[in-house]
Image (cartoon, rainbow, N blue to C red):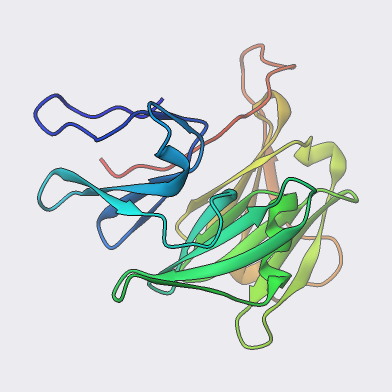
Length: 212
């Protein structure tokens, strides 16, 4: 549930929304809101002014299922009512959204994370594979496979420095060094560990990193 401090109220409340942070701003859209305009608008929180603002949905359709902040822009992944996937990109500097090649939309099949300007995805459709987005060719390339026994999908991804943490059911965690992963083909070299408390059947809904 998205709420705001009383001193800086948001124009509407949302649940089941998608969000992304870019240039010290938090962008929120989609989901169910407190009024009928929620699917057709974005809410933006500016940390420098500590204020919320609203923006009319710049896209042709509100059916966005994922936000990705990359290269100073917001990439939007959409899924229509009949399951069709497509993608677009929004440039905050000119407030313009436009469609793009739909290959990036394949990231809807797994969790994603950005490490130093590079987009990674965990493909869970046939086992678990770590994929990397190639900007030049606008295509996904497999870095290598991960052991299904270690990853225990469904998983979420978390970036810490130059490492990607793959957190699966029961909080089982696999850590991948992306620099080493780029040099090794086949099965990825990684380290793994599990929690010391009983959470065998717990599934991860979402995970985030924060700076303290």
